[in-house]
Structures are given as structure tokens and as C-alpha cells.
Image (cartoon, rainbow, N blue to C red):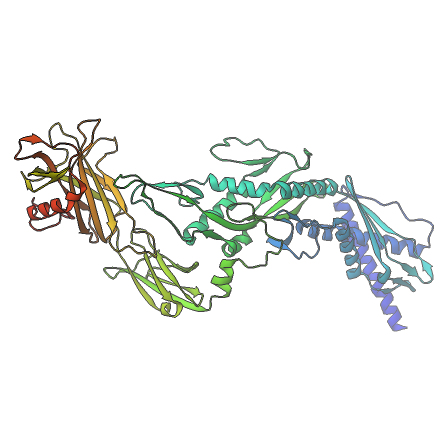
Length: 628
């Protein structure tokens, strides 16, 4: 008897609390809840219970719809992204759709709310009320401007069956919201709109920015390599993602499209939805995930312009970079009646700088994540210093395709690497790149020394007027004699002398691909002939120097007048290079001018020896000015 009274008290307290809470809720949201017609024709106890359950349903609507609106219409998403405090369901990935049954989710949400707040058997005013949840079912109709919710929950008061269903109606724009959302997902799956605008943003990436993402083009300039590591490209990719999402706009006519491209959407599924507010957002929680899925080829990016034609100072290298990454976009559609934003996610996938064809299983590891994170069982500690022994800060260290890290103020980068044999690369602005082959266990405490590279080196072009002896063939002579000391190539009156010089590394580092031939001439910025030019890309190595001088005074004819073939060692810190070239003006003791075809290239060694002796036993290519 005491337990029965205790149950009665419990039920009365629960019903009282529910009624008080619902009264407050109804007053606060009377604009959005459409009242249900009063129940009639049943005993008073049954009517009270039915009203209490429907009031409890109204309270559950607010809680469960808030959850469903933030989680893409899914109570427990299996494929989702973190956005704020919620896990927002992914509706589409790589053209595949996974749109949930929202009506079913609403019904299950309200029913679960009732289970949480009602007992199977409760005592009410001395009468037993029984709720049979095993036979409960729901019906939810999402119609224009409203949601109708019916709960069939068999209920008995003593032996009396309470009339079913429990039914409420909620004012909502969910019908229009879902119609838009379904059409958006379908259109995006068909035309891959978000992938296309992401690729557009990549193409529009600013080459003058530190966040530039090179996609395809032509790198020009002898000694002007394009070098990018994973660490240097990742910030740019993240910037592209955030820029793209922030510039997708709904029903807007943006200005300055050329300077600051926006990506407007005015309709989906052939419909315009003028009364809906739509916004797009990138979840910050995904930033760390971008790192896992990002890959590019070639990795690292090393584009070295090469001469197009031998001895012509025109170096070019086409490039095309294949990028792969993925990221979610959260689509938010306002339900003005509920004062809520309905949110769902669409996964954007770029594979090889094209819209990807991945599956919806985004838990699958990328190659980089598998090799460089999951399977990285060995440890690397790389200390980078310059030739004076000072630590080099900010150097990028890579092993295989894996980013070991960026060196700190002590020149140290540490990280996990796969246990294998592969290439170690070290890149640092202002230094010669380092590359070599190592076993992973050799890198547990490895010291690397990098050389300093000058930004600009000045090439000085010098000529020594030379006479040739007896002709031995077309362009070949028995001997040569230097008439006077050297002068700048521009100091010969009424004569145009054009110099062409090729620098080829004697022992290039094939692990970096950075040591390439550099070809220069004495054409200035205004396409005039000058005595000195500034170039970049000269490395502190030994170069084979091949050069020739041409007399271009006659605009219709270019006459070769001298060659050299020598070597030069470039020490660190070298800012000047002097190239000395013979200028053959006469033959046969000066009796006549140099005839066609000029000097033959086979005379290069003979002329090099001549200048070597003239310059006091020093090569005619030097980092210091010679007395010759």
C-alpha cells in the first residue's frame, strides 16, 4: 500500500512538472506551435493523461529538432564532421548521395524523448496508467509551413484504452528547407560545383603571395628554379579551401568578380527559393584532417628551367602539379518559423587536380597518412648548420614523401619516419639544397651542412683583342696572339660584341635536381648590349664554362670571333664572376679582316690556353678580376 501511494505521488509530481514546463514553453513559442483541438469523449483521467503526453511531445519537439537541425537531420550520424558542438551528417561525397529519412528521424526523436520521461507503468490518482512502448509507432508529415507529428503509443487507464494518436502540429519551414537541400545535393553530385570552384580558386591563386599554389604553367629564367615543399604548399591549400567556401554565395550579385572571384548560386533543381536564407561554412575542426589527406606530385616540387637551344640564354620548364585533398562544406539553410538553421555537410574531393571519384568512407587513410603517420615507426633528428657552424632555422626536412619538420632556432627538426631506405632532402631559402640516400636508422642523430647561396651574382664580360696567324681551314688558324689588355665588351668603338656563356655543374646533386645549366648573355633589360648583368641561381660548386663572342655589328650577320672552354670554382659568398673572351679582329699579321665563317668552335681549347697564359696562369673565368 505504501509503495502504491509512493508511485501515485511520483506520477502526480511528474505530470505537474511536465504541465508547468509545457505551459512556459507554449507561452514562449505560441507563434510557432499550432494548438491541437481539445480531446473529448473520454474519461477525465484519460483526457488529463493525453494532454500531459502531448505537452511532453511539444517539449520534446524543441529539444530533438534543435539536435536534428544541427546534425543534418540525423540523431546519431555515422558519417559526419565536427561543426561547433555537433556532429553534422555528410549528405554527399564525391558525387554520391546519402540523404537521411528526416521524417523517420523526427518520429524516433520524439518517441525517444517520451521513453526518457515516461515509465511503462505509473500510478495516477489511484488508477494505474500503462504505456506499451513495445507497440509504439510514429507518423510524421513534413508539409508546407508545418510538421504534423502523430504518436501511436497504446495507453490504458485501468481497463480503459486512451484514444490514439497523440498528435501535435509545429509551425516550420522544414518542407522548403529540405526541398532546397535535396536539390542542392543532387545538383552538386551531378555537376560537382564545389570541386569546380575549388579548382578555379587554385588557378586564380596569386603568384606574388606566400600562399601561392602553383598548378600549371611555365617557369622561365636560367637559374630561376621553382621549389616548393609540402610544408610550403599546405598553408596555401588551406587558404584556397577557406577562400572558396567563404566566396560561395546564394542569391547574391557580387562585385569585382575578376579581382576577387565569388561563386554565386541562384537556383537548385531549377527552383529559386527567394524566401530562404542560405550560407556556407568551413568547419575549423577539419584543419588537422587536411594534413592527412593532402598529397601532390611531384613531391617535393622542383622545377628547373633548362636551356631550350644550346648556348642561347633562354631557359624554360613547363610544369603541372597534381594535387589531392578533401574537405567538408557545411550548408546552412534558415527555418524562419523555427528560428533555427538546418545544417548538413557535403564532402569536396580533389584528386590529381580534378574532381575526385572517392567513396564515402572517409576513414580510409591516404597514402601519406599511412606511410608517414601510421607506419612511421622510426625516429629522425636532423641538425642543420651552415659552413660556419651556425644553426639554420626554418629549413624544411623531408624523408621519402614524409615531412620530418622545420628546423627550430637550434637548427633541429625531429619527427617520425618510415623504417626504410630513401632520400633525405633539406631545403632552406638562401642555401644550397641538400639531398642524399640514407637508411632510416642513420638519421636518428644526423648533422647536415648547407652552403649559403647569393641571391644575385654579377657577370662581367671582358674581351681581349686578338690576331690570328696563318689560316689552316675554315675558321681555324695556326696561332693566336693577344694585342692588348682586356676591356669591357662595350668599350670597342662602333662594334657590337655579343657574349654567350654556359655554366654546367661538373658534379650535380641528382637527389635535388637543383644543379642545372645556366646560360646567360650580355643583353640588358632594354635588349641592348651591356658589359655586366645580374643573375640568380649560381650555386657554390664547380662549373664547366663554355662561352663564345660574336660580332653582331652587321645586323644581318653574326660572326663568331672567339671561344673559351674552361672551369670555375664558385666559393660561398662570391658576388662577381669575370668572363674573359678573345676577340679576333685580323688575320695574317693584320693584313685583312676576319673572313667568314669566323672562328670555328674547335679553336676553343687553343684560345683558352692563350688567355690562361695571358692572365698569369689563371683560368679566363674567375670570381675575381684578373690582370690580363
